[in-house]
Image 1: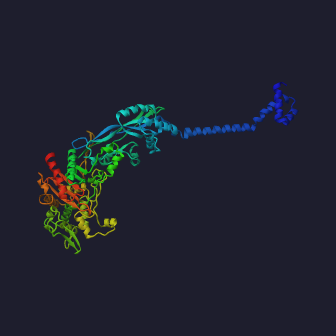
Image 2 (image 1 turned 90 degrees about the horizontal axis):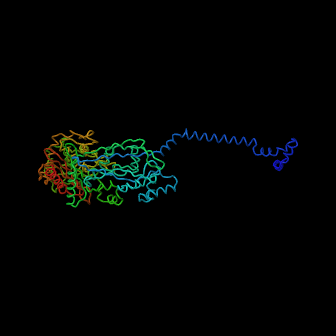
Image 3 (image 1 turned 90 degrees about the vertical axis):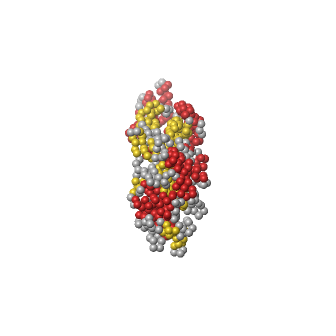
Length: 639
């Protein structure tokens, strides 16, 4: 036996001597091979071999199931994921439509500006690497990494859309960053339009402004294809005509390499630019109206007011001014917190559009409406008289005064409107002794027929409805019953009645145009090119609700307001004017709201003008001069 076999023999005996000796006794040549055979059998028994193959088959099955899951069950998902990593979807903004005055003079411009953006899915999921990427971007754009992180944290679930991390870059900075952006992934420099308002202040409340879309707006507008870094109309015409001005954004699918750099354009859906607006307003008229109102406010040491001018034949707005106002470019360029705080905390509230949102008691400016209702219901004729002795005493208990001590004597409808005689309107509104007035039902009916208590539907957002109070309203809101005194107060435009300047101008148009309540509008035409133009036509809301003869009576009475009554300053104009003043009590310790509303020329009215001065006192003293200045300029210098 050679040395190797001897050693194996010896080793086998050491491992299992008894088993080997038994085997050797039965086999003469066991000493030649048995020890080695015995050694191998010990480590690869049938049981172990079976287990090994079972494990092998089980692993193969697991592998097969995983392959099925990846390629069949979730195949579409992973193919989509791979496609997303290979492509980028780029938003192609549409050019926002422009706004022009009625002489095609531009009121806005679109200025190209650049933003620096980050695409979250380009950033590593590894926190350390992600921070390194953000720090590199922060250094490149000279921005704090903390500010970038805060911007990204606002949208934790966003991976698809870019997040703006620095806005309003100038051209040189944008070009340099565009070059730097190729050195690392995640940073993009994109171009978009910034709105510039060419007539700041004059058109502030009318045009409004656009601004960055808020999270709430984005949630509401995502189905309309608005995006994370989008801009949207916030107030004024910019908001009201947002769908028209915005246009339709396009998209571009781009193939990128492993570093995120663009390689090829795979597909493109081109944007459709927004449509343009042509207004009913001449910017020179609007600017002059603002200037005149501002001068007259300053003359009486007042700050808050509104001036509205309409074409009574068409409902076209000729001027719409609310003071105080502000520079709308502050918002378009991204207003600073300090500037916004100054505006928001200003006690004069320059952000508030008084012309369409301000609600005030009308005072005597409502009296033409009351007179028209009483004439229409045959409660009075132009010959009916009421004796004004200084007021009405009711049940020997409540006294409702006239503004003139001692009264105005015998008063018909002409004198009542010309001199704003309260006693006449108490009587025809609420009745007195045997005289039956309109009552609350009649007052409610005619105020609403003339468009009060509802929106005029002028094409501006946020228009107020005003309020025509009635017994049901008072019981519900004030938990009080309605009394005859409430009817008397309503008949002279006091109490809980609330109107807006636009509503007053609109019902004044009914007397000027012969009986049509029109929808006032600011936009004359919408167009995208010469071939596609849409003219906005006049819309009649209501007509023939007052007989022409009754309208003519009120119209003559309003003329006497100027010739012999409370607005005689206007009789010095080169055109004949009809109108009505108003002084509306609303506070025990503040001056009344002051009104004037009227139209000119008398025979063929071209304009309606309504002036409100908050806490102005007597309308005849503070509003009539503003109306005089505006009508004088309009008919003598403008036309």
